[in-house]
Length: 390
Image (cartoon, one colour):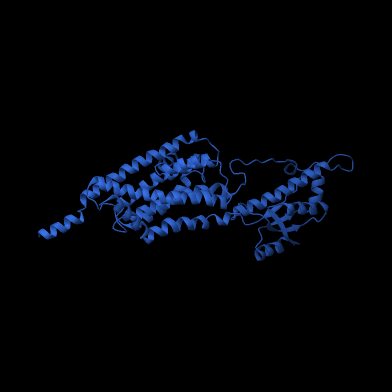
């Protein structure tokens, strides 16, 4: 069979298999919108609160004004007591309840420590955290104002400690403090990795699609067929990676610190290693559905082992070593160092070399499995010849 015929067969096998097309193109396109869109606005803003003012006065009104001026929260409703506020919380779907305690004005003037209360559903930790941030920011601003006002005797008011201390927070590597900017880029790489494993595994496993690329009987032809299949998927995913890391980054306004050339240098061994691993899975597993099952079950552990959600130092050392067997772990590590931390290319020497090593190991294993199948599979021409002899 000529090289051109082998190429046509491989492309026909890919684009005639509905499961492969749905996984490769449908999966990437669907997850590029389905996963990031809920976090497009990065952090919750203008969260509605109900306020219970148990000490109406000038200072409590000023605190409410400062709280309402925060970009994170707004005072939507007012209640006379906590029971009424709880009813409003349930009925109106508020983010929380701000309670200003009794004798708030007097405690502040006397230098005592009044306790502001924020009641909310902490299951939604992003929402609750931003509500606390908005309230604490308003309290700090009120404390700063009080520190500048003199007492009737000529001395300045001494605010309580939590109001008197100012903060200058400078978040590093995630200046927007958002989920989208930090997590989504790494998840995009995981999506590329997992759908690539499933796609090339489906078309190579069992008898589905074109089955293992063993139509030709010689080891050289088998290697050529496997290489064409691997390169075909790498080419497809090269374009899909440009879509996720290019167009989607622009759409979601995800910053880029890495140069395009550096990202391409990381993508090449990443896609080659993942495609070779997927080919091995397809050749080792007897049924197509097993490929999907194995890859999907590995997705959640890989998210944590990658170290961008759970701290790498908190993961046991044996698990960290196991994680580096899979191309997505060093791939994500190299990508985050370049794009999030602004590291130079020499800083990713270890994960980059690991990706090339994985490409060599899984590529060699795939060649061995293909050659073994070629020896155990009788070519169709031999079957036809044997039938004529009988």
